[in-house]
Length: 300
Length: 109
Image (cartoon, rainbow over all chains, first blue to last red):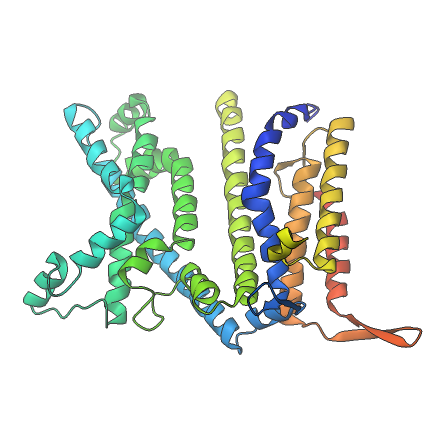
């Protein structure tokens, strides 16, 4: 690596830095300031040191218990939706037509859920699942399956998960489809000559070629699901009890419900740090996967 | 000062941000004055000085949080300044560990 990097181009993005300074850096500095103080309204602040962070990271305190509970809940939610959306997205992509007019139809239908605003998705499912007027809720109850996402924890989780799967599987499918489309026909012809089974073609040709897009899909979906707020808030409001209270919902409850700005600031900084680390891993893996590819292809 | 009262500035946070700002300015000046080549270290990813600073800062935040959660912030030493005494929190050890980690990262990553 003897290539030098010219850093002077960074001066061209100075205007963006100024905008970001006012829209992100100053608020972030304020959050750091709040996280070390206690507030009693009317801009009265009292120094608390790292007290809120101690409380936040101690599961025996109320704040710590709520933070860890919502963190595990969020991780469980992300794990479940990834376990469903990724295989389902692959299956949908494999089942999609490769040519003809049906391709455009499939792509438009798949893109539709992605175009709906988050709060509208929440409202659709909130009504869809209602036992009195919702098509899903009414049908299930009519069939003798008790279903009520307002009072039953399992039903609330199932609704939020199915809603997310409905909303975002398309993204995984579209990414996988793009990966599949990039495979030259020669690969399939070679597999056919070798008498490879459908499973062998998937394992040896399609899955390796989808590796990179799958990585993007997994990381994107993890980030999105880890930061989820609007949809579960609209459908369940974090309930019943706290069963679907994810970190972002907990954060809003502490900051705007209880007006505990210090606690909320400490929680948001830790939350932000987790997201920052995952983002960095995402960025690093993506850029390096892109850098390795031409080398490999060049060496063949 | 009334206009920024909502930002709730304190001396420690102001010092923290000024130090952070100076670090970023120095790194920017270094990048302009002495353009460097990316290198591949123990993480097997190409990194610049800026990347290594970023990794060091994020790791410092993690080290401090883990220290607060696992060790706590009990005082380890009482400093006497004339009539007054100042308790030194064990969190400063986390700061020292973070600085040592930053040195290791700048040399090896």
